[in-house]
Each structure stands twice: as structure tokens, then as C-alpha cells.
Image 1 (cartoon, rainbow, N blue to C red):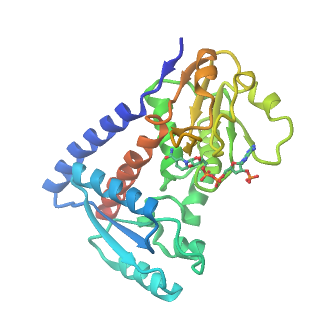
Image 2 (image 1 turned 90 degrees about the horizontal axis):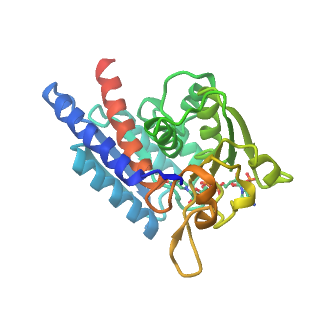
Image 3 (image 1 turned 180 degrees about the vertical axis):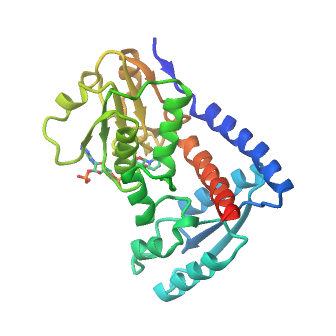
Length: 283
Ligand code: NAP
């Protein structure tokens, strides 16, 4: 019988510990603060931002939202980022994606001071991850590693297969697994005979965004399966990338959707904001 990894419970524990830490930091005059920039009025983004704001509230992290309208120019966006880079009371800056198509999100991410880049998207932080230096790491991959750690799942020497190579999830996760001494294979949309590769995985991560992509025949007996996917099925229900009902019996550990990786992402964002506040205070 597989252990179902409880991301909801684990994320709550991370947030509780952060609250204790933030209370202590406040006594030393350190008040962690996150600034979130949203451009336009994408309804899903509004929900994500609200969830981040709630998590901040719960932990005692200050939160300020900067709403820019749909017609905002690149100059205006960059100038806001520059202003926030310079404000001492702001420790973390997050640009909520998507932003309107006429704006260059990469240029905007690159403008964020890497010391305030709590999403871990800045090239300096990506580079630090790649050479194994401490920096800010993208929150979802960080959440996956935290789950493995908390459940005492051995990574060193294991065959890890990551399906998906996005800059936000797949690539940083593959790098983190490599840094933790796994033997890592990344699969993507051009990979041939994917099942032959996934069948060798001791740790299999699905991060592609396709419901029921990972089926039981693709999974080795006793594998650890981490489902990063968030999709809506035909009935409008939230599902992952793994055919959970059929895959679960073959695994040793598996994450559900919802209640798996999802809740960890915000918890790790909060962790990054607290880390940024401490680093900035010490420098
Ligand atoms: P993305 O940018 O769309 O990347 C998807 C990746 O999957 C790409 O590398 C793509 O390959 C690969 N892929 C697509 N179809 C494939 C196929 N048939 N076989 C093998 N690989 C395939 O997505 P993302 O931002 O990484 O997100 C992935 C999933 O995770 C989505 O469901 C998203 O909603 C979810 N997500 C969850 C969280 C969370 O907090 N739990 C956070 C972020 C994302 P190519 O590179 O070749 O195109």
C-alpha cells in the first residue's frame, strides 16, 4: 500500500514554523514584506494573488499589491520594479504571470533585484542553482524537494525521471534532484518511447499538464510518484498528470491532486520571503 503524501498537512506545518520564525524576527526589528505586481485583470491570477496574500497574513508577512492596468507599457512596468528594488522595506518582489502579450515577461523578471527574486526566476538565481550555490529557487520544485525530505525519501543514487522541462518546474527540479545526487533524466514532448524511460524511475515526477498521462504501465513497482500537474478534467474537477487510481497501487509513495504539490508551492514562497528578509537584514 502506498503512502499518500499529504502536501496540505506538510504545507500547514511549514507555515506554522514560519509564523514562529517571523514572530522572532519581528522582535529583532525584521519585518518580512512581499510585493506582488499584477498587470491586467486575469481572473485566475487574482485568485492566486489572493491566496498568497492570505498566506502572508497568516504568517505575519506584510503584503502589498501593485495593480497595473492592461495598457501598461514596458517602461512603466520596469520603472515600478526599479522602484520596488530600491525600497528597503520590501524584501520580496513577485510578478504574477501571465502578463499582457505586448509586455516582455523575461525582461521584467530580469529587472527584479536577484536578492528580492523570491520566485527564483532571475538568471543569477538560475545560475546559482546550476552551480550548486545558495540562492532563490523556484517554489514548486522547492516544494517537491521539501516533500521528499520530510517523508525521508532517499534521493541520492536513485534514478529520477522528470517529465516536463519548463523553466519554472521541470528544469529547476531536475537540477535540484541532480544536486541531491540522483541520476536524472528529463523527458519532454519530443522524447521517444517515454514509457521505457519512466519504467526505470525510482522517483517519477510528472510536470507536463496532461490529465492521466502517467499510466500504470509506465511506472516501476515501488516507485515514488510526484504529480505536479494541475488540470481540469471533462467534469471540471481538478486532476493531476497521473492516473492516480491505477498508478497508486504500484507505488511506495504518491502525491494526490489536489492536496499534494499545490499547497507546498505557496508555503515555499513564504519560506523564500523570510529567507530574503533575513539575508537583506544581514547585509
Ligand atoms: P509548461 O510550461 O506548459 O511545460 C510543460 C512541459 O511538459 C514542457 O516541457 C513540454 O515539453 C512537456 N510536455 C508537454 N506534453 C508532453 C508530452 N506529451 N510528453 C512529454 N512531455 C510533454 O508547464 P509548467 O508550467 O511546467 O507546468 C506543468 C504542469 O504543472 C501544469 O499542469 C501546471 O498547471 C502545473 N503546475 C503546478 C504547480 C503547482 O503548484 N502544483 C505550479 C506550476 C505548474 P516541450 O518543452 O517539448 O514543449
